[in-house]
Image (cartoon, rainbow, N blue to C red; front, side, top):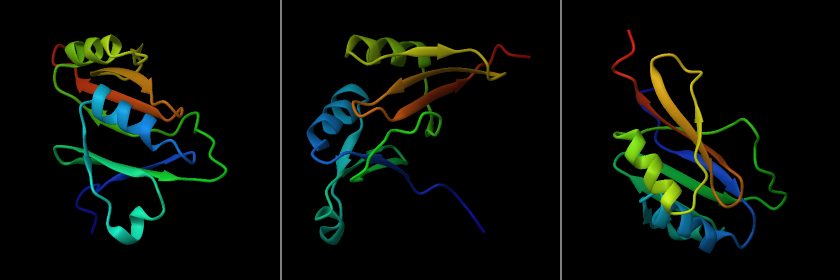
Length: 123
């Protein structure tokens, strides 16, 4: 029985860890968490915010997915979007999901991220 999502793994190119840290920690406000030693040798980095974990793993022939993405629930989506934009991130609003407000942003290597919040004014 599936109980919850433990983490989402995204790919990244070789030697991108510093750029990823700058985005996930400094822009999104996540915390970097240590990888187990056997996995740390492979490169990449892991981040956490509350119960949400994003793992960035190194992939030699990396190519960012155009559609695939994690959907991250946020509280105070307008303020969060303003914060990301002020920190240099792209914020692209999308109104196509009924009952939600959402926007997309991309990390420095092109991974697409969705940020969404339930729209309580929606009927």
